[in-house]
Amino acid sequence: MKTANAISIPTRTALASVALMMLMFLPANAVLGGEKELAVTSLPEKVRQSIDRAAEIYSTPLAGVRWDKVHELHGKQTIFQLEGVNARGNAVEMEVTKAGRIVEVEEHGISPGEVPDVVMDALNEQVMEFEPKKIEAIYQDGRIIAYGFEGKDKTGADVEIYISADGTRLLN
Image 1 (cartoon, rainbow, N blue to C red):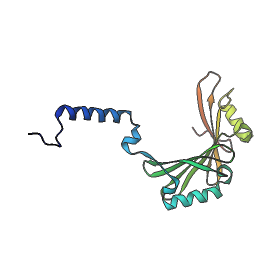
Image 2: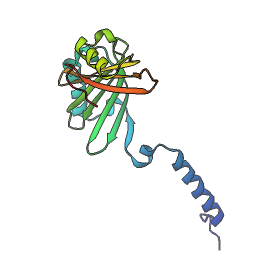
Image 3: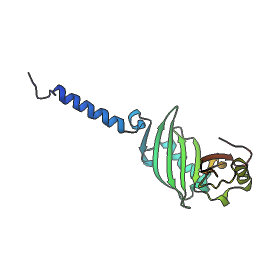
Image 4: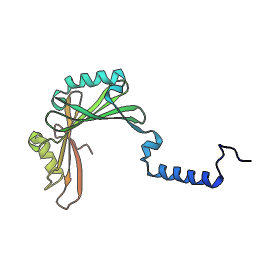
């Protein structure tokens, strides 16, 4: 006897197949709940207070910042990753814990002239004939702690290298 809510076996199999195919094409974090996009206004109060505090502590990279995206990342602890553009037109990222601790701030689009000579010298010692295509400054505790460089070496191989702000340590 068929009821109005009954679905035939072939129909259920077809629906299950469609659902399985949809899951296969979704990013893993959408299925597993590892990341979700949020609005800045929906962030916890401690995180919003940290964003305001960060603008004072990290005044250079965050001057005039406009936050475009916020991602809630779940791992060992919840991290909120903000992405935006500052007054200089550079991309910036900031990571803040759920408790409101500012983990780091990154400013992408740094020019080679903004990188200290000791860091550029250390870079040239590590990778000969390397001209970086992308440079970022990485900030913690209100100061630059490292610079990141991306590009190709003289053989055409991709290179990504991080050097401490004082030029004394290779960080990768």
